[in-house]
Length: 108
Image (cartoon, rainbow, N blue to C red; front, side, top):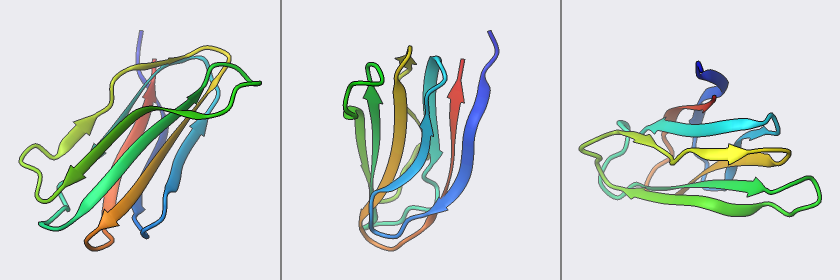
């Protein structure tokens, strides 16, 4: 089965938790982000929140934090299955300078 880009961007951080994508289509999702613009003293957090079904609340299913220059700038989340639920991806800068990050949310 082929992968479909569900959401794509560059996003420039602003120090708040920014929602990059919210999707409800059934499938398996993978988020990827390019951190090549990071320098020492920069820290970002990525959260992927999910709902089991429409009556559930959104809770963190995946969390990653990255700091400083990244030797391997391409980052991928684990595969997250969604069936009759929801996936929300957020990005937050917690230290350093606001920077632009290219990212995609793919679904299979």
